[in-house]
Image (cartoon, rainbow, N blue to C red; front, side):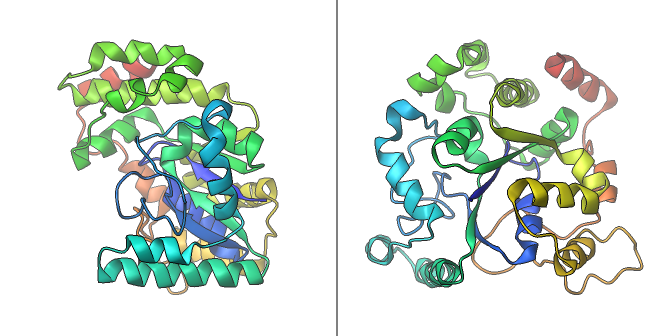
Length: 297
């Protein structure tokens, strides 16, 4: 059974995905629905054209998406399609990395793990039509907005409002029209957080998980996620997760995860408990209070 880890960008999906892959039973697939290249727009990984951030997939438009994702979750790599689309030596190296990982993973009977924040609004479809075990990360809104502010990110609501099926199925997104063109990045990020949380909370067949609770106590938290995903919890997985999260400052980081290779994500090794203390960094108390008010309820 395929695992999908999703949630808004900067909600801990890369960290969670890497920790779930620690047991060695999953092949990590990074953001196939990202409309930018890299990591998206790679036909060897996903043979479908992504046109929007937060691409909405439902039964009414799944004619192209379903066969493409069936190939992806079955770890069937499209070598020829990727060769035709190559644009640089980096692309060739990525082709070899992913193509090899898919082929060896399929031969070894491993499952795919999709780490994709851009699938967050389509999580129900992935659970229902692909049979994915979906883990949706939700981060505290103040920390989420603070992270976006530090990176200088903003929300382009046209990406959401320009998808008629998405607006049809989630009409509360129409409230975002008032912020189209706004320069208030705090209000826009808070509105995105609130709308997404509302959608996730009423989506059946998925597990909504607090990033903060997972980061505060990762070993029992990931043990529960392993059970939900149908993954064996092994001493090796526990050891790697403990080292990667490194709560004890005297604990060696050796043997944890490193940010390396061609599947680049936002994940870094970290002391996950300490990271919680820095979540609101860069925001004033007044800004934090405003975000609380904007996302209340």
